[in-house]
Image 1 (cartoon, rainbow, N blue to C red):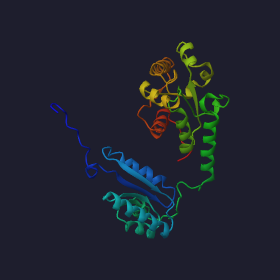
Image 2 (cartoon, rainbow, N blue to C red):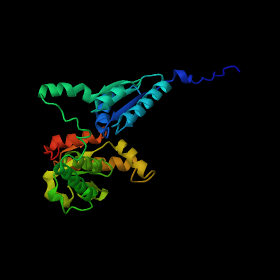
Image 3 (tube, rainbow, N blue to C red):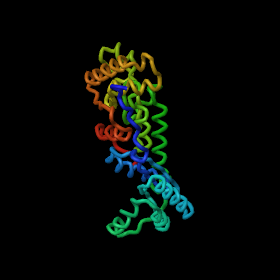
Image 4 (cartoon, rainbow, N blue to C red):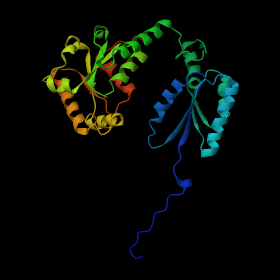
Length: 291
């Protein structure tokens, strides 16, 4: 047919970009391996990764099974998997190294040099960082998390006098996860109060009366209206609550309230919970109870 546009054939599967497989392997929870590895991977945002976490590899039998997983991934993709590991045992580390992957082990990289500098051998204790090795630290964490849960979303303000910080912002602006993270990671007593439409419209720019005695503890979180609209739409689609117009109004009034009341605040639109918490710690000069 004259003038017909030829159909574009799909690119052969063999030419499609493949995801690089990443393994996070540890004899403990693998949280440290994930955290350190992902910190490095974020510098390569043009590459897609298939991430696999393999925790509690604390025997040679488990290490052999992990090697099988690594080799299978290499065979399927045709590319060497990248392995981020935190393995204390030399034998297990050597077993993992026999697989068809490239290994970056954080303990192997730094422990020897650190022992040399400190002139002391390490304890080689598995899971020491994330384990319950200090009852006082553990209790600080749990007490702070319980505080965050009890004082979440403005349900009660009776214990605000105990708060290290009170996060304020519109609904779904990241207050709750930040409070829980501050408690779990740093032992910070963090409460949060949601600014409702009534608070924003009828207060003439003033903070809610219930917050005024704790003004020095207040810290605001704001977010772009577009991002807030996306988040709220997942929870309550096609509602006034999640409409872009409603989000724009609430964000604008909340920011005006912060500025009028001289309440410090940050925009968390592109920030992770970890980044929000670290920024709050820094901006408010909060003292960590847990290190």
